[in-house]
Image 1 (cartoon, rainbow, N blue to C red):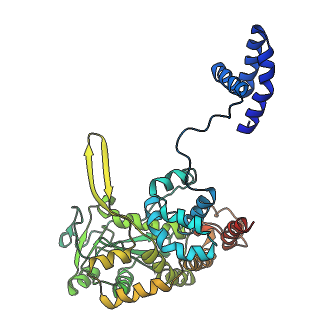
Image 2: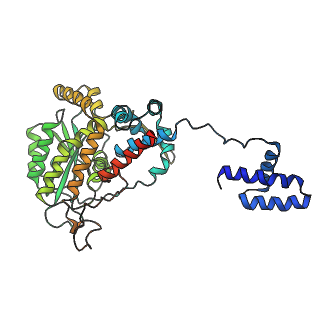
Length: 425
């Protein structure tokens, strides 16, 4: 029963209750308790309030400040931005709201509330939606044995004050089978700023890894000072070792089978690669070219200019409880500007470019490219599609169907259009 229906029912029963005898009142209370599903004392209090003509008791606690329209708009921005957690979402709102105000026709009152909402409030209001988000990770890294005694092991905390110290890793796009050649994503992240770059290569050959790393080094807005990798043979080889030595780049590695030594890049492997491309198999030159087109243009601008991230400042353990404290969320470009150590012309160009870009258009462009990439996947060797007799007529959704990046463009436009139509009414 709704609260209004409960009040109507109590108002109808109240005259009978006042005129009934003691025995009849007991039977009537049993009826009220069975109908409302409440305790006898609660039923007695409700009947007494109705007899006095008092209004129903107000809900305890502080009234909600943010309207349903505000939360609906927040959910739309949250979905388009790729479901960032509350601290990052609160930080990216100032960057996204100017474009959102025009695209979603946000009223001034809702815009004011979105500018004032805090991260804990976002957590509470979006809690039910967050429970549906899951993730799944796996890899195909094989340990390398060459030159290990020449490459130092780094396990201590990264305490850097300048950009240029990178963690690198490969992400496999093999689907259900590791046989033959298939695409690999070389993922790179900067420790200080969180700046990320990715390139796709066919296979995991040493020359291909070195070539992709050189392409990334040329487009980074800061000089490369060091790289840190796992123990895969694609990294632990003489070709990459001599490449770093010739350019005075410090080359370190983590311990075998200890992913925590490369925690920064392991996290970015999900955010920048797996979350977008899923677990399908890509093994054609057309898929390689399409993935690189995605990595080199719209995606890098969206992630580095409009997606804030947080950094762990300290971690304290008291008994079994671990307390972590993070700094304020900021985009990689903002962290690079704050460091003052980037390549000045490149940083200035990126800052001016951000003022002219619309993050919603970048998301739409990324989504369009992803749909083309999904159509180039090898369905026969992709998860969940091996038993199909023929490829489906339309691209199959990736593994996380609730993620905004994995929704068809028509579904996104429908969601935004529904929000605009509700405001116009």
